[in-house]
Image 1: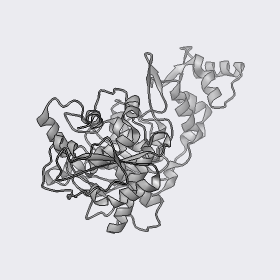
Image 2: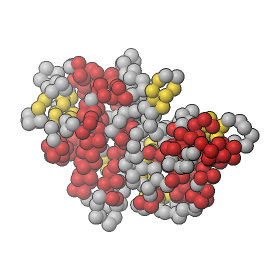
Image 3: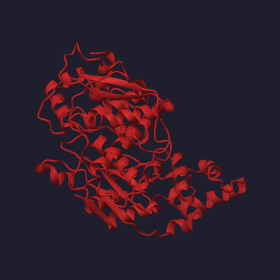
Length: 433
């Protein structure tokens, strides 16, 4: 087994201190990308864990289907349409992960029926080499252990996007076999580069897949959504006790919402709350699913009040809801508001009448953007893709993200989701079962 393979295993799974537990978690991740028989554009999940990969793929697949396709019905997809959608989606995510868009892409595949000595190392196999890969179905009964699987994987490199797209299409059956999700995950990681990922992760010793519960980390989710394996979901970088904490640096194509924010465990920034397309991954304590709409009005350009909130919060890294009055001038300059010294002092006295030396976010927005805060935006039809488990005993748990759960998700005053998103999460949600 090559050093690169060992590095990849450690990055994903961590140090394998308990073989039995790791094998259990590994088995839960051994599935392919399988389309639902009842919903032609919905992907299925069979065990807990791989939703960290399946949900982002589902989200980008819907983006392709809804906004780049002339197809009238998104519910019905033929096998050929499913093939094209999935392969284009995988290529889009790989392209996003390509570091600095250098044009170097990797695909990881596996060889069945070969001995370790006969198998090409993951450290290099040219794209033009002939690889006879036998494929199993997503529910194949054959068991391939953790160590054996990693001894049978190989990497293929591509220098151009057209070459990558051809290879992804050629290997379509591999993405549906029982290791399709893992092979795609490894392809993304090697395309990004292990060192690049370690440089972005807050704690490089923490594996991308939790060794106890088997869920994917936020770094893994962010990598698939944005191409960057940062550990945080706020806008921009923050300083904390001399440590630089990396966040999201630009508006994402697909968004992210989480119940953890309502519980005040994290703060999701506007770059993820207000993505380019009205598609969001919604996270609970144990599962990820996909919420989407066909109405682009939900992701209209950032309003001045939203920009003001985002800028204000960059000067409030601890999310206290206020800033020292000494920073008011900087905030107003950043927003291109009048920043003459006399006017700044006038605003300090008005926004801080008690002389506490702080400026609260609410009064600041009310002072400069009163009309926009009162605006009532119209409703739109939104839909929820519930990525459910195949087993009957887990069906209820996988479909718990109903309007009641979404009301809990968005009900906290700590969550400043954009008004139309909140309205439609609560009022016009349907599910794909």
